[in-house]
Image 1 (tube, rainbow, N blue to C red):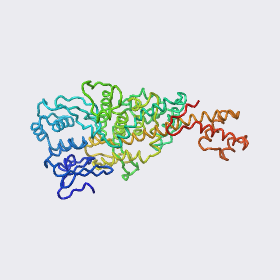
Image 2 (image 1 turned 180 degrees about the vertical axis):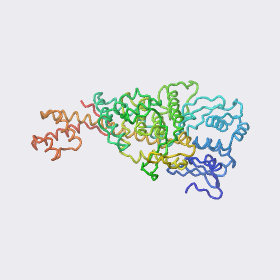
Image 3 (image 1 turned 60 degrees about the horizontal axis):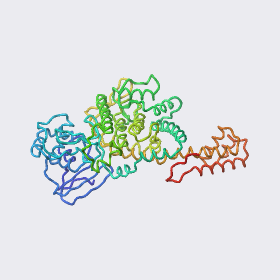
Image 4 (image 1 turned 60 degrees about the vertical axis):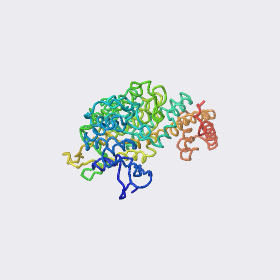
Length: 543
């Protein structure tokens, strides 16, 4: 493997800490190796291998590895927390005393106290330039809240209770530069308002069917109506609280026999559920006793970003660096891009799996809620993200599996007879930090791609279809006195298939002659072509 060590090499940075202390935590994304040879980089699907010449090797000890990590690597908070516990406070206290103004020592000091909730035996810092905990060239961060004790700007994108991280990648830079929110708003603004309303009403139904289909469920009737109503009234939803999430979950379930009173109090798992201990397990969520602290952490994470958005943490004196500005939404109140916040919240929710059922649907509901709440979409507008996910289910599964595959080797568990004729999962070790601190980069990139496709393909196509349908119907009505419902069916069939097939002719339009059908088809096709914009133009108004 590309990160296999040769005889004169050793791991440095966070991989060095993991190797040194034998930590049972996922490998860091960036694996640094020091030794003979030149500076080299090698990109793998789940790792970035960085080889450094021996001149970068400043010592074969824990503090040297920690300093290397903070200086050169995107930080992995779960790994650092485990390393801090393993090394104890004394080495870090000695380092800060030796380098009281050093930014790497002060950043490590802050992280130790922030992650462990334990105060080091050190006086408050009095010297040293204020710097961010995260390097904005390597990881996305909030506009920092000052920590006077450490002379550090806390730009972490969560709290100790839940704090994912997001690496700055070339893909994310390209996606961020597209300004998808502006694209969506322009697409909607350029279309006729009534046409937008009709398209959005259809998208609500389409999104409902798609989100249930992702759970392999064919939804219809009152159950579909309840989910559509929840989407349409999501501005009234309280997605951050246990009560609000429970109410939403019960609304979607609809059957009082299966409603719940709050977050789960038993262990669940994702897999194939059989009546013996041969169940196939794909993913094990947190233990029931950890759900509350993680979900309160999610609530605090959302509050952090809302506070940042509302300028409560801001000081006019500090200017943003280009790296920081790139990941903050434009306007008078810069904050982390809504798509990033949306991915953090929605995927953290589904990874925690706070309910025994319905987590996937609520996870996708949160996407819609957050996009509107943080100003990505205008009020009442839904971007058909679930439709994109359904169209490429494998990509959606891969986004989920990037997380589950990374943590499953570190969960000790066994089957136990549940006393009800089946078996249940029992988790044996403390796993909370696996869900509390994770690299959300794959999920953020994935959601960006979904939203991009949903805007450029699905939303655009729905607006265009409404315009095509309107013009086609007018063209048909100019030639025929066909009843409304029959005329609408005729237009839909021609727009979708280009013509009326023989079977459809006989079943739905037996009264029409072949000559009439051909003439009507040609009129609808011409209307459709007139209503179809060039690829880079906005959909027509329908007039």
